[in-house]
Image: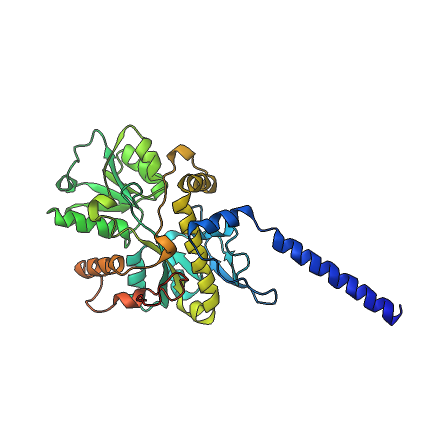
Length: 347
């Protein structure tokens, strides 16, 4: 092959690659365009030469903004992608974020506070879910034939909830104490959300605290009665279920964290704007009958505010689980990675 022929061949190859790259750029996904109207700001596109940082994340049979953001293509054109590590039991998520065995995790505020108090290197970086009257974070069910109607009626009874150390325990105990209940006379046992409807229906527990989407089946069960939601108990103050990041990962990969938080904000805003489509995705994701799937609500733009964190610091101190002054609100969260943060806002 002559030198001129070689050059012509190279030019043809370069032209073909350029045309292909333009074609790919023109083929943006419809769901990306639709979701951009939900009020979120897209992260800056990563250059073709940029290294993609993978973040380790559980792949659990649940509804989650990371899975939704991935499905909607919100990580495309950014510096990062999720790398799923398989199923991780809920109680292990925050400890594993603390050690860096996974990089992000979504669990309730008191678990994060307790982990930080124990020396875990992590911070809340996105607000996650919120409680609305029409979209509670958790609901309280008894059998219709039960005599339980008031908080005092629970003394001597058994309550089933999904885990100790999180919202179900602390929000409930705070509410019961405020109504003169001796919580030491109540038997609290752990029952997974997807089994708690059956547990209360069969009398294995006297009251079941159930989170969406599984609370939808209990709502439809004609043998059960919903007494309260967490919105009834505290106006939704305890319902923020945020996303936390491992500190070392954040320090080493700040742009990846910014891109994850931006994707979470876009996904949360999409769910708020498209609740019925989100319900369909939830049903598909976890294999549940759509009519039993309840909606989720998310904090706008995933901006973190201090009151929900202070709420749990106060509860943990009152419960004797946290020494006064051990953890301050500013130790728990940061908005520095959020593209929607106001320049003059705190965090």
